[in-house]
Image 1 (cartoon, one colour):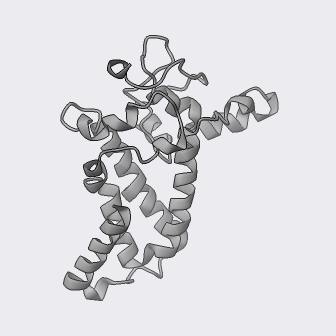
Image 2 (cartoon, rainbow, N blue to C red):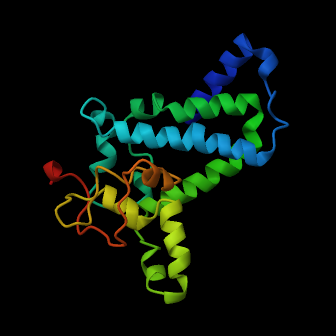
Image 3 (cartoon, rainbow, N blue to C red):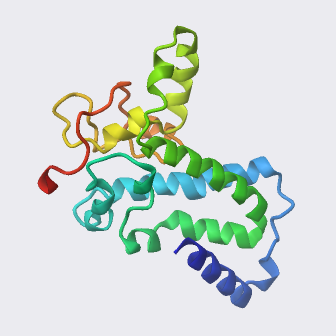
Length: 199
């Protein structure tokens, strides 16, 4: 679906705004990256957050129904969840405007973090135990999504003080959760993930 959205935005751009194609290609790479963080990652934070509302939950429910954590869950969502995701359309427009090379770097970094947050191996667990890494891990867990923070979002229950499925919505950046008050950092992992009504 993502390539289809990019194809559509390119075709519409060519039809309606041909003079804009590649018009922002001279922007500094760091500015493009910052625009993508806001236009894609911040909007995905909000899209993810409102997808936990009763109206949009059916589009996102499949992502939470798995009783395991794995990189296979990364794209486990309803077709329309992605079709209506604002960040994909904004990214398509950005690519049309000349962000393509920066987008390739951005999306590889983002997918690495997202897959790392969903992966079956909690890579952050041993790092929390190394005293010398505590300051670094304090920064890491507040900057990007990690297994500890994202597994809590997939927890079957909030009753253990670890689960936090009404928060920790961040995809690439966890800092959005800190800014908007939905963050919970415990450095622990829920005993069970998935949905209770699917047991």
